[in-house]
Amino acid sequence: MTERQAQDGVGEPDGFQRMWTPHRMAYIKGEGKPTGNGAGDGCPFCRIPLLGDEDGLIVRRGAAAYAVLNLYPYNSGHLMAVPYRHVADYTELDAAETAEIAALTQQAIAALRSASDAHGFNVGMNLGAVAGAGIAAHLHQHVVPRWGGDTNFMPVVGRTKVLPQLLRDTRALLAEHWPAPS
Image (cartoon, rainbow, N blue to C red):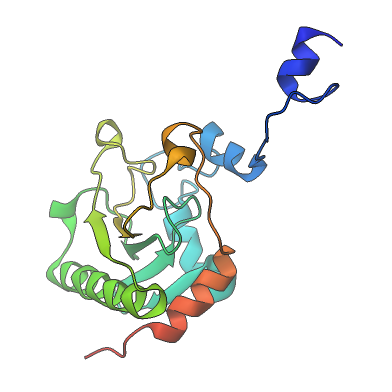
């Protein structure tokens, strides 16, 4: 057995457990990211609303914005409030979009508390690629549920996140617990 075979996990067992997450390679390679700055450039946030709720992982649709599960979540239930209109900056939102993104964020928090007893939340936007936005051309606000002790050796040492539920199941659960609009 070569050193390369041992490193790749083929050949003789070496005592290490391996968790393969090949679906993340699309994220790592940047597949599905917009190729330009317009709505017709392959933007997934423009494409998602054209799909059915289950296929698009949409939890709630509003008039100006929608709530969708993150395809590459930090935690189970990680979702985003996204305007339908293709805008990159928070200052470009109109009053109706701003209000609906705020309302969807509040509803997301209520649904996540009801569905999964989340202890806390990270809520925010990364505006621009240098600020960490994976898709900088289309604004989106993250709502990430948190639980005491949810950071353990897997993400810290293993750089791997373990998610206990399929995204379709999480979408169905959150849709069931989503509060009625007020």
